Amino acid sequence: MRTDAREFAFKIIFEKLFKDGDDSLSFNAISEEKALNEQDLAFYNELIKAFEDNSKYVEETVKECCEGYELDRVYKVDLALLYLAVSEIKFVKTPPAVVINEVLNLAKKYSTDKSGSFINGVLAKVVK
Image 1: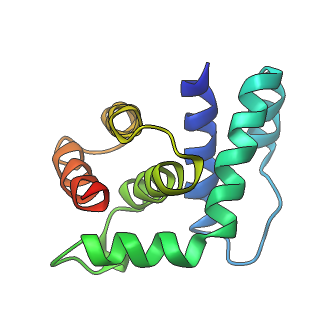
Image 2: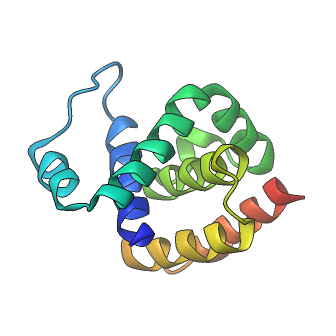
């Protein structure tokens, strides 16, 4: 399911926020990658490529839409979710409503109670 591929991509983006220049995958990431079926693995690869190829644009877009927040003060989980969402909306061309719904579900699972409204507000500005 694309949801699993999206969740895996989120985890990799989150991990990359802490690993400057280190592209090696953790043991857990490798085991999750093997658990994806062929279609989901292709979608996961598309998401990661979209983020990696356009990371400067993605970061600037999130920065512009996070009015009143410095990116280094945003929870890393929320930042990784925003990077994933912007990458998918802008470069994978998944309908924004689908991406936002999926990312908000991941926020419920991995982040704080207030993260959903924060992420939703930032992504509303991205889509505008």
